View (cartoon, rainbow, N blue to C red):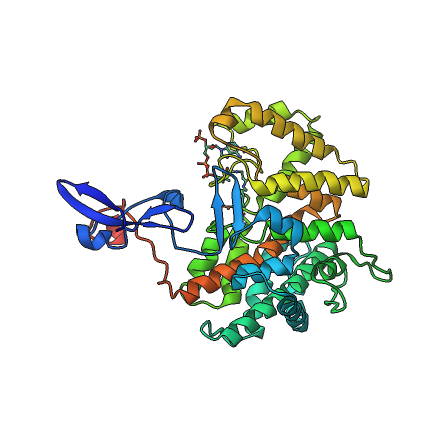
Length: 428
Ligand code: SDX
């Protein structure tokens, strides 16, 4: 017998079932609230207390700093799996065996060709266009070049759409970077692994042999895994709600890219680097910026700090911080902003304002330092986040469609003008 919640509205008591998930999370099912109460709904700006769905993909515990993809800990996956193995796990629900993984990798390679006409879209953008805007447009444009909408109930059609976007997206990322850098576009190289291929498409200079650096390959593979999914974050919720209208997969993914671009979300990794650079330019005065972050009259926030769910520590930030030390050490890169970042973290961990509000470094705080050491331009940092988050978005979109979830359409409480008569313009 499930527990029940009772709501008393002016003496009328309404009962609602409490559902419990596989990790003992509990939620009041209010799906019958409006009907039972004659029109009363709930309101919860930012959905801080409201679940949008039941999902079997990612579990996170913000108090304990736990993050698991399909039951596997992020620590183990980052240490023992590769990105496409994790992508398969997220999308299809189980770790692939060697044969299945090899087929997945080959099928992705086969679909890594992007229609040449898509280049005309990239060419139309000014060189200074932000890469996230270019990427969102190219991803949406994929629909025009792959018009057959996805029959989600067909395993075969769904698999084909998945390997298509997993194959083409890295090429679009490469073209986005090359546009930003004024470099000729490159195509996918099917002789390479997924991450090696991405790095070569991004970095190979005309007329020069591109030599893979295993440190960069390993670092990027790990970063992509750490960014691969994060339950119902802003961009994933966007992908789900756009997909709930039965918009296509590519169009839904494009909306997720736009949401991720926001500096409060995935755009924070770029904002963190810009903040650390500003502090460095300002003589490394971290105390001044801590004071700005605490000053309510100052819109400045300590970018890369705080999280809607993690109120202890972001397990991804812990892994990335260690990786940042390793990568910069292996590359022999001395980056003063890493020291500034560590100084800021140490100060915030002792500062009452941050401790009271449980503000700790999140996934975006250290990732940009690695991207920069890898030679990735700051404006491309959020594109790298999108590259990692792609399989998570696909998995969440697919789950939502397979569960035949209704179209997302929240209610509201109207606070505008009451009914009033129209007045002709000569009498206003
Ligand atoms: C990502 O949801 C996900 O899972 C996202 C993500 C993913 O993998 O998809 O994890 C990726 O988006 C990580 C977050 C990246 N964003 C940033 O680093 C931007 C800086 N952080 C914040 O803007 C903020 O912490 C959020 C947006 C991340 C969370 O905001 P919430 O949960 O809405 O919290 P809030 O704004 O209500 O803040 C609570 C209090 C407020 O102070 P009071 O009104 O209580 O006095 O904490 C303060 C805020 O002013 N606060 C900060 C702060 N973050 C919150 N003060 C200074 N600096 C900050 N960074």
